[in-house]
Image 1 (tube, rainbow, N blue to C red):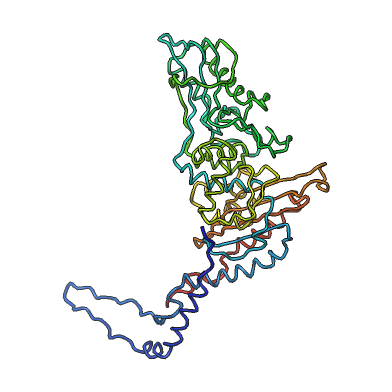
Image 2: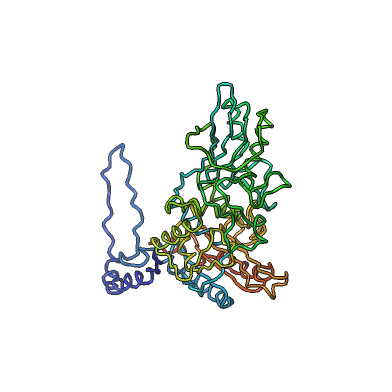
Length: 488
């Protein structure tokens, strides 16, 4: 979507010129009062009461109060934001708009580390490419005999569902556990309901929907499994077999193991240990489970900043539009989609779908354009974390009593990049925040703030910027309302 410049100052000037030219005519007309209209009366008639005549000239700017209010308020907003912009260094960028009208930018074209703000891009493209009605389907296939016996293997076929979980799985971060899960227990129940009593072979996991790349190659080894991945078309509990056991490099067998345990708990015997493989073409579907629609998946990804979900969504994008369930295909679709939206892609370098890689680069201009292309009301806007709300990455930011608490909806992003924990000998870190701020007058502030630098991810470094920005946003609009400027 092309960046829109504010058209209102020009409109106001255009309105003022004829208004001034017709000033004399207005002075004459304003003194002429129309003859009062008197309705015919009868014993049952009701007198007609005429509204008070407006004295505002026909061509006065007061006849377009919304335009004038927006111009005045945005001018005051710009004035309030200017000192904040001057506090930002060259390793930061900032871009703000109101309902798509650009208000201010600073280093908007600078190519910086965006961290998890990349998820905004992945989510927005997924919503368009896959559609809001899209769901994931996980199936179980095989051949069930009349006696309920599966002669051979039972195939657990992954459909790419990134939130296929056991009810005990509470995610990698205690502050924001999963909330839109697809319960794998329901699949086990469906298998039992289908009449399966035993399996002579094994539960065999099939993850052939996507490729076999478990982690983007640029991810730090220390981040693998801990911060994200493995990435597989068949994944249960982010590759956790139990609350204390995980499989870093074999998510397919881990998923098959979880299902095997659930079946045995339901009295279904399984002859062999879980394995990985590919379902034979002739196999029939025994049971299946369907995820919630895509907006719920995106809400899970954005609110909790789930890196694994972002990478799986990226591969699904690649499969849907690029004919390959790969990271590379997904990234190609993302970039081509952004170009169709007229998002400025100069300075935008994406190597994953989550922003966990230190090699990702983005600009505030690109992020703001993506935000403007969507809206607060769509599956991305509604999926963002809310300031001060529990269960999301903003649970301890913009808390009760502070500006924007319960109002701001935004995506956070954090990269520490410390080599030894001091922040003095590692790469520059990142702290990002981009999203929406709805205001009482019905307008919506759209913004992107990327901060890069040594130790910037530390609370003492980034929070003063966030606090100052929030205070300014909370005061908008500070000028006259439409009612103040309307015709009189």
